[in-house]
Amino acid sequence: MTDVPTYHLRVAEEADVESVLALRRHAEQWLRDAGIEQWTKSEYGAGVMKGWIGAGSTFVVQTDDGDIIGSLSLDAGDADFWTPEELSEPARYLYKFILRSDHRGNGLGDVLLDWASYRTESTGDLYLRLDCWRDNTGLHNYYLRRGFQYIDTRPHPIRMSGALFERSAELRLAQSAPLRLIDGNLGHQFHPVPGVPRSQG
Image 1 (cartoon, rainbow, N blue to C red):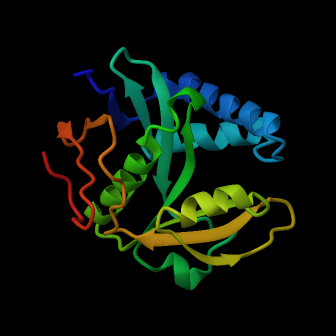
Image 2: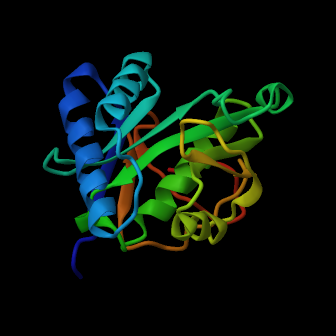
């Protein structure tokens, strides 16, 4: 039997900044090649991502050989889009969810979304939320197929994000994916068991 790929997830460190920014540049190029006008302000985006890494809010995904192929950030809500009432609710917010294109399509993204829900629930929050590009309907559909509910679209005079989505932090939707995700925080494999709002080793 062929070994399944193993990925390792951990908190990003200062030494990971350039690798995470390289993922951002990779995503920018992929979007341009797909004809999607998104993430065009590279310098601004890089500054935001450096801030999240410094705050301990960013996580990186590595292969067994240490190659960083993905990242995501979990932080507080963005007051440009969420109301004060919404920001007072028990939620964590997903930002800059990036997977390198050669590691898509194997179920890793679904497992990571379940992990983000688990992480959200483990901090006592009830909802995993995100804002994404208003015009990227393909991305909207991606999240809708993964259990997120559409909340609203809120325009901003400068920023092009503002399509708001949320899903229950208890939700686990990933089916048996041909891969392993080792959570460095937990010290063992993360099992996204559908209907079970916890991680089991």
